[in-house]
Image (cartoon, rainbow, N blue to C red):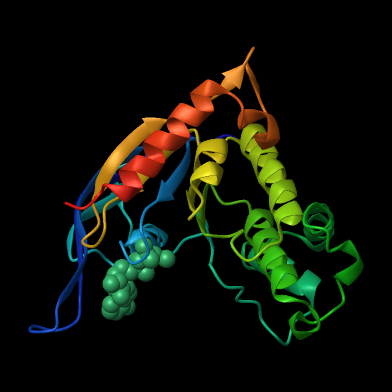
Amino acid sequence: MRHDKSLEIQGVQQFFGAKGARVQALSRIDLVIEPGQFVCLAGPSGCGKTTLLRLIAGFMSPSEGAITIEGKPIKGPGPDRGMVFQAPNLYPWMDVRANVELGMKYQGVKKPQRRTQSDYYLQMVGLSDFSERRPYELSGGMQQRCQIARVLASDPEFVLMDEPFGALDALTRERLQEELLTIWRETGKTIIFITHSVEEAVFLGSRVLVMSPRPGEIVLDVDSNITQGGERLPVSELRSVPEFIALRDKVRDAIQHSHP
Ligand SMILES: Nc1ncnc2c1ncn2[C@@H]1O[C@H](COP(=O)(O)OP(=O)(O)O)[C@@H](O)[C@H]1O
Ligand SMILES: [Mg+2]
């Protein structure tokens, strides 16, 4: 089910704290994110990436400016947006499957359909054998995979991901990167993905954004569709493609020299 909703961020600034101790997290963000884009957002720690994602999720309203979806201002969280947090946030009293099915349950998805969906996503994240376990019986990485399954299973049009793979081992990370790309290609979801890894940003994103140190503003905005004969290459092969190397260096440079 492809969607056609564009996301517009207009003159968004964000301040935290009271007078005297006021911190400006976001300087002035203007962005249009087209339906179906895979946007990777990189930038130094503390530059406001999570803040921007939380604003899009609707957990808070911007101090200045507006964020709209199809021209309608975001008023709060909604089922059209799903957020994968940096740290897993499962309900400890529910087993893995119940956690994965929760969003669907809220949406009124019938039990057999919930079962089919949770089976699919548990398999995808490698947790099929753990569906009846409680979160405390899982490692941190497994809990994170469960959170990812939960968000994808609820089928939001916008998938917001805050360094989702940061705590995973390299192999699991590469497998989930591939799975996420497949889901993105098949569903046409809009994905906004924060990462510390420049390679991950260039490999996954169809567009890469770099933010400056706090107060964050966008200092680089580039297309990142590196294909050969129309095919996307696995990251291991990409590393020797000149186009990839050039883009990776450009993004790395932007992060290192982004001081306003
Ligand atoms: N709820 C909050 N209250 C006060 N300051 C905050 C809050 N959230 C974030 N900040 C501050 O805003 C800045 C940006 O934070 P954040 O968006 O988490 O950055 P990033 O995700 O890029 O590391 C930081 O200086 C952080 O301390
Ligand atoms: Mg963050």
